[in-house]
Length: 314
Length: 314
Image 1 (cartoon, chains in turn yellow, orange):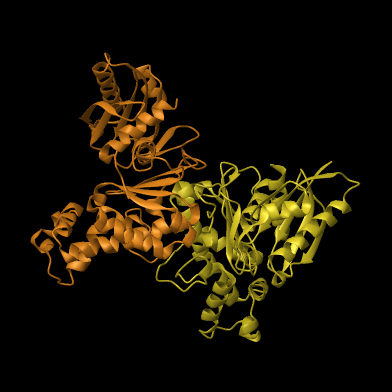
Image 2: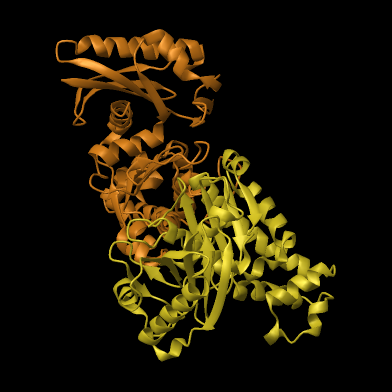
């Protein structure tokens, strides 16, 4: 059996999995990143994880190649990682030669949000289409574009930053310093800002029982499931803005599918229904008719599966 | 010499040209569309124009094929034109079989804004890049996307409607019925609305000498060339909004070039400089660094040349 290893490098954990050509994970393991120990240490840890995974499945088949998803911008011409906000020291790092030195295996790598998109496209909610975007709603809003059935990287590899498209140049401040980016509405901080704004009006809500400093999107989706009107309204508002952003992408690119994942998307239809309504309102008709908004199917395995899928293409 | 005919079908005129494989127009002719006479009449006129062009160059070479650019949405699966706002009766029209019946030549067709983009990409301001968008600022704001060196049409052919992406869901009303589309700022009506808004503040301007009902973007660019501060401010404001929209496209797609054409772009650097500033302010850094904003080079021949270029690919 041909097997492929996918690695999803994050600021806290490194997830690894051995994946079949049908996208099934046959073995997985997660270790801590220990990002503070620096670039070389993290690379050693990735290499150790890959060796462990490879050994664990050696009776099932041979590992053909390794794909790595990393949380930063990778120059598509030079394969250098420009920077990774959550990995101290990862600035202009040439990952491939250093990893190949450690592993003596065929290795590919790309941005993690893009590989999650590739995973959903190949084996999840994007199956059967050829133009899609996956959006991951977390602390940041990541995204990956599939165009003509392939990952789209743009001229130097920075394509897909949907989270920093502007839907109101006078809107709330985003973590990037600009105003009115999608992330400022649909990233975790944006969701909490919207929630506090509604709670501040004094409306009755289960959420008043939670310390505002500890409030999480999960608390809000749990409250929404209990019928809490404020919580439901929070996701209606988030969905409105997310829908404006998706409408722009649909109007520009005429995609077939938007796949929504990440922690904030735990709210499910409380978020997706208002998102679809806003998309319908803001997109041109033919673009709206052609596109479906669907929840991600692979959960937090999308990155590992997508990284392995990239490795299958070597 | 291999020759190709390009036709640019508009609501008022049909422009035709015989084009070499190097993109030079060797003969051109324009006739009125007579759109009110209906679909079949307009098709007869296109066929007559193509025959005239073909006869005019018969001593120079053989016309290989014909490309037609049409002002409407064309379904990329069925080649049916869904509708064309400026061509009465052109609703769900199957153009290709009807044109082939009339001409017995190889014919291709596509949306006119897309073919203008293909023209600039192949022989104009987009030469040498592989990812670009052309924006045509006129009554409407048309656009055409080139991705991986090819026209990008999207899943059913409606891609590229940059003019109807939203940069402020609470913004001014657009002709499409939605609010805050790029066209509501950078289409002719949008430019005039911005101009009237500034003139209404009572600021001294050469533009006060013109009847506001007759005011055109050309008047404003002529005034700007004379140093009129109000006129200059109009294009600064238009450029700000256009730059927000372009920043979204750059951030999402990491393109190499934006090519700006159409009547409003006659203002040249009065418009392009504030557009670039706003693009820089609103796009992510790597996207902004990778992209240039340039004036179109082919003027109103871009559509004919691009249509001929499409015909070269048959």
